[in-house]
Image 1: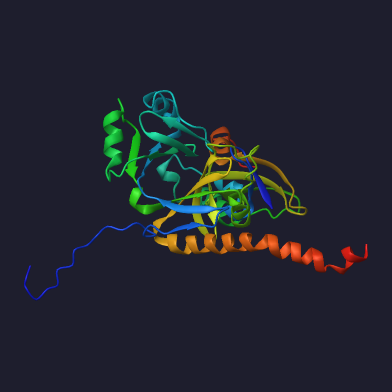
Image 2 (image 1 turned 135 degrees about the vertical axis):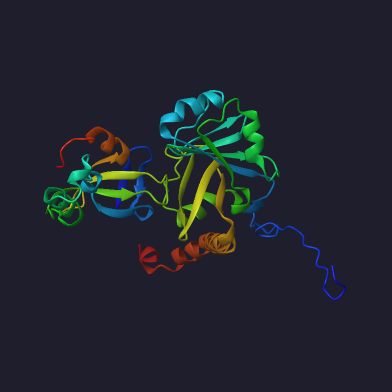
Amino acid sequence: MPEHMPNHALQPTTALGGRTLNTGSVSIYEVTERALVSLAFKASDREHVSAVLGGSLPAVGSSLASHLAGRLLGLQIDQTWCLIESTDSAMDKVIARKLSDTRGIYLTDQSDAWTILALSGDTCRQVLERLCPLDLDESVFPIDAVARTVIEHTGVIILRTGRDSFELITPRSSTASFMHAIETVVEHVRNEIPVRSQDRQQDPTTSNA
Amino acid sequence: MQIPHPLLGLRDASEFVYLGDASLLNRPSVDDPAELGSDATLDAFHEYLHLRHNPAGVHKELWFHEQGDRSWLVVTRDTTTHEILDCALARDVAGASFGAEST
């Protein structure tokens, strides 16, 4: 490198630079040590793909754990995503090596294109119900359910990891705007309870009753 | 409005994109190359591309679940009440009616 050029040592950073939020009743943090690989196939090859994955291929809308490819997310009839605890940037090739037969299966590493946010806490469902159009009642959207939908005009994949915990997978390029929307709603939810009790005290119809 | 997706259940209409009349699934096919420029073929494509029924009532239409599972759906909707009477995956409808006469 010529002497007159500055020597910038570039450091990889995550989409939110490790930003976290914890209000006591809800916490959000960026999950970084995960790889995402999409696994696409022809709908007519579904049984073959299921057999190669050890007989396990989730129905659209659900997810399940697989010993070969992490957690499998059933997003479309002909597409399943693999969510794997790893920082390997070529996880598609790792999975391909594990499968006995990859004919008709298209594996693509998606890790760099997405951000995963873990959202949990007592009021996290109140936060999500203000943001997304899905019915998140446990009878409709139980633990391990997964759905692709939209939050604040941004595509998002929602995975339920517990009664009061979710993972939100959203495009990396718009993560900052996405996080801003969530932080705003978290603040609204946090302020809501005292505002309501104040309203009740000052409501003339209730004091006259 | 909510659309009863055959795989995912009721989903908000904001996740979907509307395309148009489901008769678009029935594109005319020309098996004989000599027929490509014939009046009958041109009429068939003219009808396919430009002519639509515009019913006040039950209508079959194509919707795309863009912010969801990316499936194409054939939704049967009453245009006067917006009631949705049926919803099926377009791949199933196209497979079942392949070669059948356009309705």
